[in-house]
Length: 305
Image 1 (tube, rainbow, N blue to C red):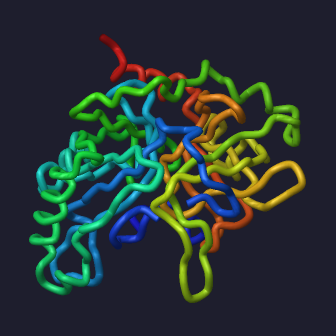
Image 2: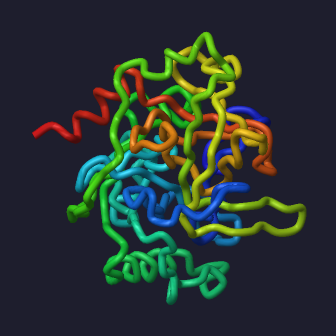
């Protein structure tokens, strides 16, 4: 996986393969969140074990909060290539090998398959895939920026990122940012009546010998479990239940990284999907809070006139 902090952490991101995979035990979005899109991006110095040369493709999810500004996870933006060239030695920011699609089920017909390039033609895979994405009218090219304090080693502490699109996407409504400390109101009521909605393009099930779903926008209703993020500093991660219950249904999985956590029934985004405890996408999901001052300032800097 792209980033590790402990053996217990499993990131919700496509593993070096082709495209981002969806919400577990959820349901189709049915047009409810058209401002949530699927990301495809290339990291030139990431190892894909199938190839003799470095370079890996990944998939994430993200939320458009203006015609050109998409909010996602920091680990979905860090190290993105700049025209196929690595950016990690220069801070991992400003790479433009990222594309976003806002279709409910993106059309991937003709997407160059990795099998045609294994093991020693990885550079050509990048050229062909970038050309395919650039020629496809539904995939919008952009530039990726992780939180300025994001690091690979401690990514959980600043796991926010922004993609600025080259071409504006005109919608009737966009995702909205929270007010400062919005989630603090739930600190003393862990199992309150408020529910949240996760949205993303990730896997629907992780099975012992195969995976299911992916590449389609789905949603799930989740319950806030804790604002303390399993020992992480307060104000970073919050935990949501990924188990089905009478009052909530589903959770997040691989490919949902960077996808939004909305206050149920609204476009108010309070966090982005960050990581999880289980390789089977069960138990708990961790989302990175974006209702903190540093995150609101970082995201807001791209909205300033």
